[in-house]
Length: 518
Image (cartoon, rainbow, N blue to C red; front, top):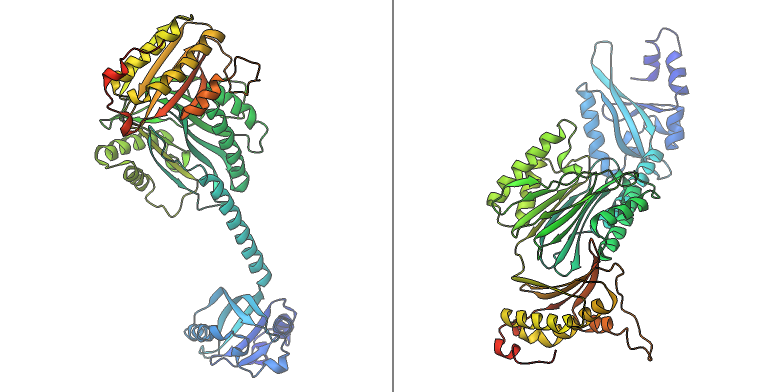
């Protein structure tokens, strides 16, 4: 059917032709076998063909070779009376350019109702599609950067703890957000555990998360107690562009059988007992970082060997259609079921995620889950109190020598006694008593700790040639496998550890008990 025939159906002669010629969208008509019968001015501008060149030609002239079958399928649908709205495809201009277009097609019927032709309205969306592609690429780049920032905090296995972690970036909106987690070897058998969540999404939140995680790790390694660490992070957060952060920090000491916890507005930490019962740790919730004005509180709680701590972010438990308290109860019951039968932490983590997030293809927020288990306590622990006097140094050596003999670790005696003497001498000369000497060993290492009642912490330094002091800690640093200091409520603890090998164990106790100086 020609445009002249359609024009005659209007109430005014020429109305239809004027309408389609003035349209900003390309309009063409074609027979059911694809022959072009009408071509307006906008079609000429879009494709470069004049009406004289286009009319009478087959529509395939503007169809890319790989879409010939698609065009045939569209014409077949039109022949069945189907109207096709806003179909996005590609077409080829006369100069060879490939255009992205949005096309609407509908059948044209004759007076008797039979379908004789098709009309197409086409709009060039190439610029829009290019913009969408660039935006998608930008989002993908930002997502990759944000994801890389987050994955730097993957929990690694460290001595004294087993861990399984899961991080699922959001599949909606700007994608990756500000979740983070970290597992830190604090030395002397102690383990630091972090989980946090920066408000917001995208690269900005991920960058803030990376800054906070780095700062938190540095502060933890510096030996700050959890509440002091939170106070410092709170001040640090106020200068960041995303100033609203929730997090929780735990400092676990399996040798002491305790864990110290401080929370900044974060969700409850769940403790799973060896018999698979689950309970919340009684920790004051506190306020999020960046708010200020209210001090954070830490609590010290017992930590049994064989227990597992469960830390997570709100993406695991919050939904738009469920109450948070009900979800937390669901998590508790789910953990009890899982840990009653799970073979290991990795399978437990997978089962928890599958149960709480059955549709793992779509989730509106980042999901973070961290399971940390402390399977065994140290094999042996012993301590003794000493007065702040010279006689305490040989007394401490005798105590340590006897314990090493009792534990079958006499191969470590020479080095351990030398380093313990240095720490005891420093405590006697530079601190206030009483002095506490604590020793412990696990399958992996021997630990020696000296606690006094003076706050300033010692540091290794290079002594001048004329000085008698200043070399003790350099000796400790050279001979120990690890050493460090940490504050206590009334002073400080200086510690060192030595790795235990199979060759170090089982030496003759008689050799260790032989007379020795001091």
